[in-house]
Image (cartoon, rainbow, N blue to C red):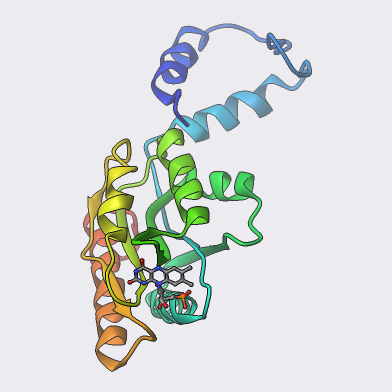
Length: 202
Ligand SMILES: Cc1cc2nc3c(=O)[nH]c(=O)nc-3n(C[C@H](O)[C@H](O)[C@H](O)COP(=O)(O)O)c2cc1C
């Protein structure tokens, strides 16, 4: 992901070659070059899918309820959702999901004023990988005082995303919080349509 621009130029340079094998400087030799080349073409494309990736963690279920509600709300709007519970996620799988997703929703409780450390780790990785993501939001929970949203913004400067309004809830979510989550789902749908990520519906 971070080398997309360079790879794009290199694919252009080799486009007229009749390639028999791909012999990388490390790793196995491939004798089905088209398999490798088409994967690279796919990875460097600027297209994103109608998908929302949600890395999350929850200590006492508050953030989990928020995530579950938002997931249902997005699914109702025919948006694909990929949740990753960061207590057990294979971080490589999260990285793969980020390759094509249009939107990331980062979900965390407040721990010592900021995001939970597992969320910091996942977000740091997402930022370093520079995926094609177009949109992002932060959701989560706090008890008495939080700078979680600001701190997450501070470690995601590589993500060239448009930010939705955060939904950060005191304790367990209540009726008005669920409304805010529905509004977030509406906004995500609207943006996915505007950017032609949902093509069939315009
Ligand atoms: C270890 C620990 C540290 C916390 N630190 C803060 C804090 O600095 N500020 C705050 O507002 N809430 C803090 N909280 C409260 C949680 O953010 C709050 O209970 C939240 O609703 C938990 O969300 P969850 O149920 O998704 O884990 C802390 C809770 C724990 C367990």
